[in-house]
Image (tube, rainbow, N blue to C red; front, side):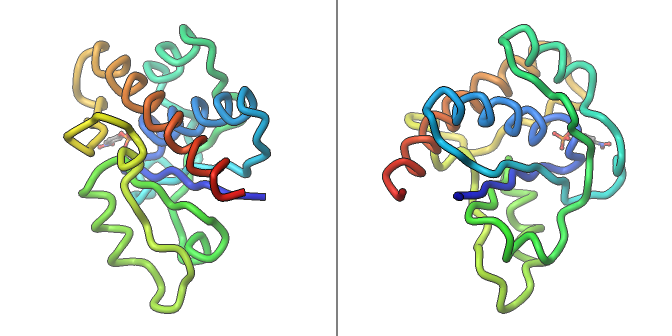
Length: 154
Ligand code: 4NP
């Protein structure tokens, strides 16, 4: 089964949203995919997703049930086929901590978003509520590209 790990900083806003959206998109596409998310920081370990992310996502029909923040670990680079960072800051962090002989190089999630020029999902944590909808727009677009990629590689 293909496997995907979404990564942001705190694992409470962007990557939980990516997990929720992509889980739904994969089901709709009839794809069996193992999906998790994690943060490069462990500051929010054990916390549920940010209520603002949950509210914005639920309005579009996505479920965040059972999600809990955790920090990325070395073993993840062998467990997952895709390790997808929400922005270039977190991508460089992942490149620094990837064990030398681990299998999967991290990439930017928005590399799969057709027509999106800035490949960073903006951090909504300190912004207003609109930021959470912008995050969803970008993540929905990248999720469609990732579904196509996984289907093409089955
Ligand atoms: P995330 O957002 O990386 O999308 O989960 C953030 C969550 C928490 C913090 C920053 C960004 N923080 O500084 O605590």
